[in-house]
Length: 283
Ligand code: SF4
Ligand code: MG
Image 1 (tube, rainbow, N blue to C red):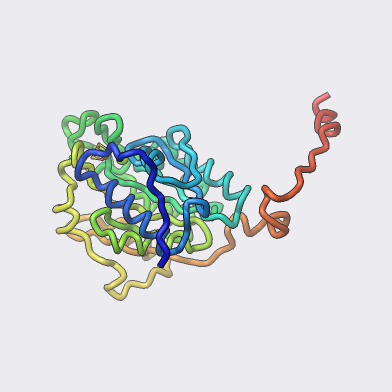
Image 2: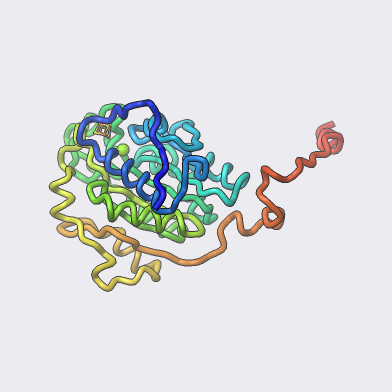
């Protein structure tokens, strides 16, 4: 197996023990396992602690506005559809500010991989509750505990039409990098919802809690080929919490359906714009 250098001169500024470290390592291991180097992939980042990875992950990348990594990723994919495109996003960034983008990217089966760093809080702004926060979680914005129901990113993706939906755990490096490899190799919209301890602002859901409750769904005989059953599994959260691949199906990806993309990648095709006639429309 080849190894590639993804490291920049910047040192991570994440809190010691943050689950982001484990995810970062799994991402690099997954790239190495697929023999993808820094020049072979594109990463779009949102805003949040996850987004700081932009500074210490050496690949093509773009760090944009809060919640907008998915539109950037889809634009890049349209321009260069043979390049793997990944979104590094968080529960607030992706399901809060970017929720509508998430639903529609899944619906159109955009051929991108979403790695969702899911810690139930807005860590970068000191730990306010996010849309995935569990009822009862006390945060700066919910001092008496969260009262509303959480959104499940996996269940939302399954409902919206995603064709690969998985959940991983930041404390399981090998299991997580295997899921990332499967997600990137999948043709179409893929999500890995990653349970990520925020050791500073979410003490309720740390490594011990997850280790006690998670189980490997795919070692139970479960088959990830039924959207309704996958939804049920994605909503399971209690004494037992499943990780693994919930759902997978083949369906033409968004970029498979444009004739002009069959000729070549868009960035290599000549730009043919009839400026005169375009202007005429507005005169
Ligand atoms: Fe990680 Fe939480 Fe610290 Fe952000 S605030 S770096 S998510 S531990
Ligand atoms: Mg978060």
